[in-house]
Length: 240
Image (cartoon, rainbow, N blue to C red; front, side, top):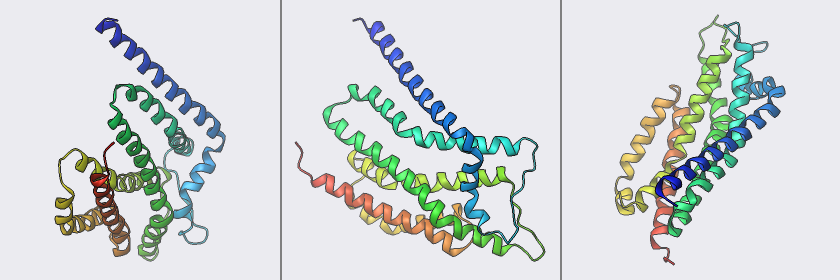
């Protein structure tokens, strides 16, 4: 088979993988569409629980009540279909990898996905109640907290991304060590700078209360330490 034929075959396979991923995403979205409003209500629960009795959210645009739940349903469908989408990506690139690369890449993909979901869950169940409790308590007297549902969605997505990316620290540490960019010993030496950086990140991505900052900074530091442990274990693990 010529080079051009091989390239075309790869393009056709890539198109097939992409189509399979899009179809899976659309099928899940169609199944979730009837419950789009319920999904948004579930997403808004941490905020609604902290509003005063009778408090509610508002929609300032005409189409917002329809499109915002639709966005939530689509993003939920993406999360549900993500394992299958990652499988399609892996099936495409795996044949071109060496055996030792496969043994590293696949666990990293799985770990990265699980860590991202864990970061989102940590934000939803642990951080949001504290953050929204602080926000509603800090409102001046006579000011009713009535958040726009679109702006709330944007805030929540930003927090999900912040914590999801933060929880990727162990994967980043392992990759850097395995690529030879940095050594485990060097990572241990700069531990104090990482701790300071973790609290700076916590101050940037959370509301201005100490508890919220600690709830991002402490997991970030612990995840960094866990990355060092895993990287050190892989470094001494006997090679086949």
